[in-house]
Image (cartoon, rainbow, N blue to C red; front, side):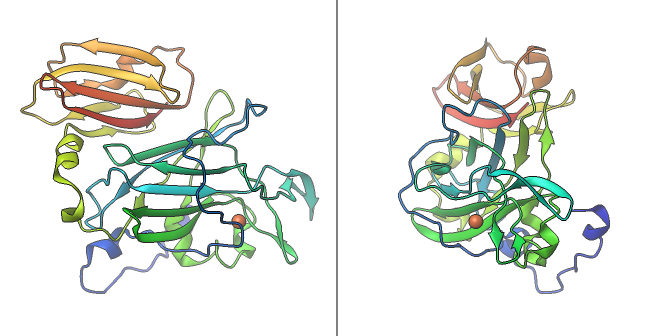
Length: 290
Ligand SMILES: [Fe+2]
């Protein structure tokens, strides 16, 4: 998506309706969805050990700000394919779907966050043109208010010829990817479901409010952790996506913590999980990207 493209997004003149302001627009399901995908967050088979794509995001309710714990996020996509040339452009094309690979059903954590590790999908022919690289999504809360959609990536030269990816509705589902020092791509995709905040269990809302935000995310030198005030915090832990503990810090006395200072300079790029525990035993977790 180019900046000039952003400037022509029409301003909505309809009466204010929260979900319209942030809603995740639907897209076609396509013919390759298979129910009951495995509950995994690492979609790559063991033989794939480089050039990962890390996607992280939060599922929100229809007020656009309340995260939904235990929401379902199903993803499926085509494999990488092979190097292909078409009109002098070289890309990974002729990719295909497999019944077992690159499929997952993920549940959001207590802070409404989800994350997974995969690869950038290749492109496959749809008639005479290649569909852009994309990841299919289904998301719902307690099996209700399901949305089916697709995620696209900025700068993909096949978007303009694809009727679904080039529609106005896909603009908020076309995300930038950043490449880290290990040639891994990172992107953030938040999902907004038509769920009323009151429908979310109050006990989990209380847990969510321990961590107000980690911003900016992906992190840089200015990133801070913002904790809710009036809590007695006990410990802060940072784990990698496989659950390996990287940092544990006890006796937290501030509600604004400079995250960058906690991260070792040689910490590999990727998705990490921040876990906060109070003296009363409450916990909250939130994912961030290095
Ligand atoms: Fe597809």
